[in-house]
Length: 292
Image (cartoon, rainbow, N blue to C red; front, side):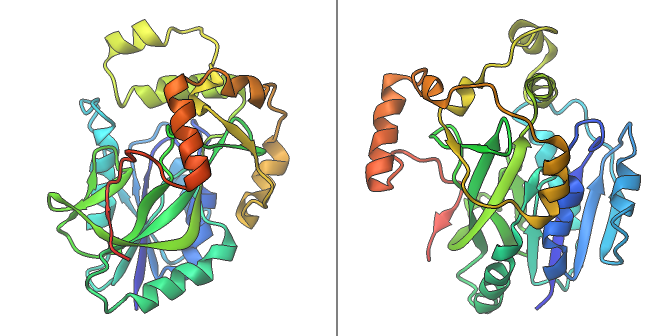
C-alpha cells in the first residue's frame, strides 16, 4: 500500500498557518508528500524546506486572483497538488495548512486504509472534526461548523476538490465513504482578537469582491465571536507537533461562553438541542455518501 499526502499553501508565515505542524503530523504514514506552493510574499518555501524530509516534493503554482467566488481558488490549488502525486499511490491523504492530526489517531487511520484497500465500494475515508476557536482552550460546536469531511481518498483522477476544497467529488457525484474513528484538529481560527480580524479580511478576499469587503469588513472593526455559536472547553490533549506553538502563543480568551450562547437564534437553539439529545443534526449538509 502506498500513501501520498498532499496540501496547498501560500503566505504561511505572513498568515501564521501551522503548515509545518500539519505536514509533519501525517508525514510518518505517507510515502510521499506533495506541496503545491503558491506565489508567496514571505519565507513559506524556506519553512517547508526546513522540514528536511526526502518525502516532500514542492510544486510551484500561481494563484488565479480572479477566482473570488466561494473560495474556488482553494479547490483549484488542491487539484494541482492532487494531480502531482505519483500514479502508483493507492490512497491520497489531504490535509490543509491549518489542520493537524493527533498522533494517537495515526494507527487507526493506517489500519483503515489497509483494511479498505481492496474494497472498491469505499472511495474515501471520512474524518470527524474538532474546530478550535479563539484559543487552544476552546472549540466551536454548532450547526455553523461541519463535523465530518473526507480527508483520505482513492488516487483516481476523476476526483476533484469541490467548491472551496472543504471536500471532494468523483466527477459530478458524491464520494462513497466510510466514517472512521479519527479526528482532524482545525486550528485556522485560533488567533488573538486582532489576528482574527486580519484573518477574517484575508479569508473573505477569496469569497467576495472588493465592494462586499468594504461594506462588511471595514479597515477597523471589532471581531464578533458570535460566529462560534457555542464555545466548549477542550479537555483533551493537543498533538505533540503543536506543543511548541501552543506554549509560545497561547493566550486567555476574554469572552464568556455562556453569554455567547445567548446570541444564538431561537431556531438554532432548538435544532442544537435536538442534536445534543439525539446525535442527529437536522438537515445536515453532507458532501459525501456514507456507505459504511
